[in-house]
Image (cartoon, rainbow, N blue to C red; front, side, top):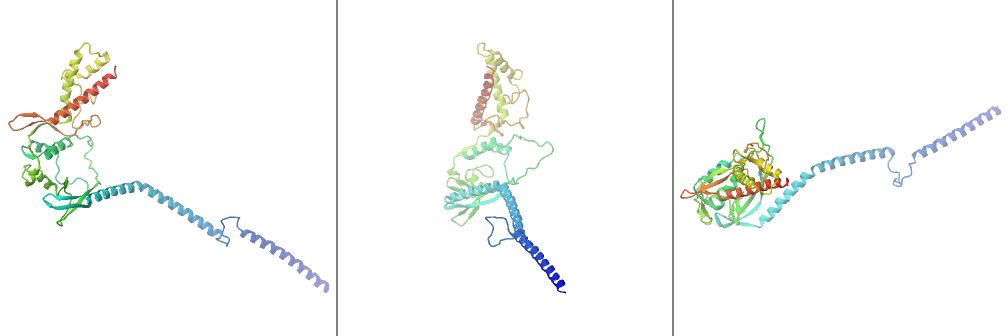
Length: 364
């Protein structure tokens, strides 16, 4: 009996030692797995678990991605923002500068007006009154008295009225897209009135274009009737005639160049080599006594271009896309050459001769 009991106690002791040993290894292993790798930035108080660290890392990556997307969007819009800021700054600067300036109301010089800011309006063409080439021709053909400033403005507008159409739609009419805006100055006057737009000239403020026109001797019928016209230098408009395009002046220039070159080629000792003589001769249209090609020497070809669709603004410093009156007739019926026409003719002639001589010198 004692032997059996002793044997049983021995087995229990061995089993206890065995399980104690297993428990010690398991405990040591569990403690080792919970210890993080050495990291100087680790929180000594225990910090986040591995799951929390993974979630934090994922959130950081997502935030970084969102920041990159935001930065890209901001970069894409940066030029537009800068342009808008620049425009606002210019308007603000102009407004501040103008706020210091006071103008006399043209209709009552005892009243002063001051610009207070700008009003934004569409800059797209409207169905309102506008003038074209035919209108300015009509104004200049009228025998009337106007201010010298208005008369000069009519001539300038006619010269740049857009008679030359450079681009033509091949398949129907293409409607232009307009998204522009303009800024109309606003004024407040000492009499309590406020105006948008108007015209400023020196120290006077005209509340509208029509008031300005009237003050300069131009009424709706283009006749001077304004009581303010006494302060303006009025002139008699001699009716203008023989309106010419750039190509029309060039045609007259070509005739003169033809005469010059024809006479030069008759001189035996002019000092030209055979290549230069051949070049000059190749320019001449002997039958019509002008240069070959109606846009020569700007276009060195024999082609007859449609002048209403051919622009030379990249080829000539004296290009214009409207009309210039060749003559005008004053009282007495004497036709006189328009000084502006003659000035333009001389400049185009000199430019053409320079082009021809430059090309001839390259053959020397």
